[in-house]
Length: 316
Image (cartoon, rainbow, N blue to C red; front, side, top):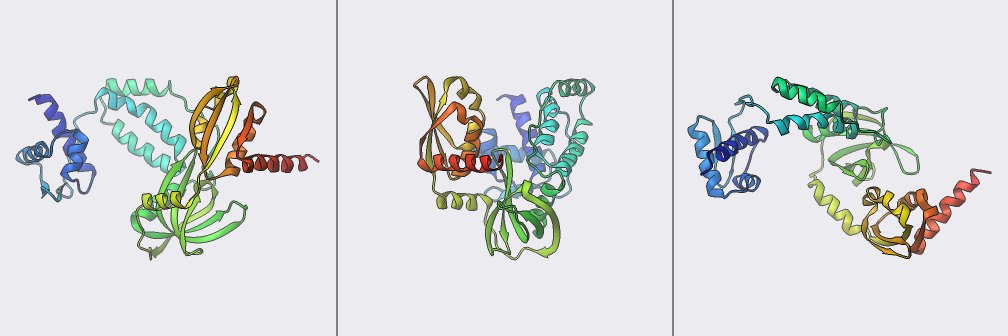
């Protein structure tokens, strides 16, 4: 038996138990890629070492409420991950959530060895993440934090929300969950105005406030509603030809628009996409239309024509 490997696993199991209210044995077995029998032995070993673990096989395990020990230390790889974590969170989170994350990260950095602190500081100075576009409304810096608090406390939210048509509407909602798709943050919620589950985009929030009113609906898990949406929406196939010289510039961004596969043909690249939003795709296509050609469908061609005509009218 590898004593070092088992020690690392026992320590890992302890910290995993410390981070969650209840953990099933199968979850631990999957995480550490060992058998259930091994996990049962590890739990017994931790109990014999004086760790107050509650629960039993078949139900789940948790630490006695309030029991904590400080982590011994982070290894070098874990410490270096702090060097980019804060920059990434500042890029993807709104102002208030980024501040909370920064405070938590500061506490974790406090237990690092001096040499690791120096390495992290050095790495931070060499990592730069440019924010090309702000996909959150800077005038509503606490949007994500308010959504998270709503879900935890099961309290409704009052929104002033700008629709696709640019109309400002007031809504009371019960948040199901938050997710990111492409460059945007979205959230699913029960809308009292529409009396149905609706999807919202975070950057369209103009005002957000947590209410005292509790949830009134029995909400299903977020994945359930996302899967239901996929079944309702009809996927459309799009085929475009892009010049070979320009195709390489679309390599990363195309993933956000339902890219499926590509084939080199006629000194260019034929790309196939699946999408439910033709107009959304058309707006993206306009960015490189002079280097491309629409093969199908006709509805995409018409959407591009409509966008061009609307743009020309504004030049008059």
